[in-house]
Image (cartoon, rainbow, N blue to C red; front, top):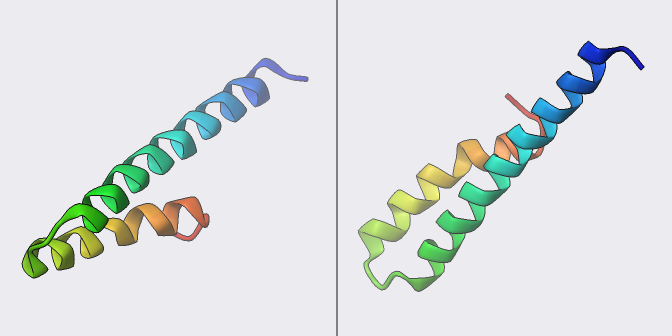
Length: 57
């Protein structure tokens, strides 16, 4: 394999791992909150991370 292909794969895996981490943290806060306004905010924040995990831009 070419070095650039391997580096691209590593960066892609790190990118998706970061997106999964932030989505998990946001979902955890979404579930724990009692305030409706915060829950809506967490839901809006969660949308880009879910789209990135599903590979939609």
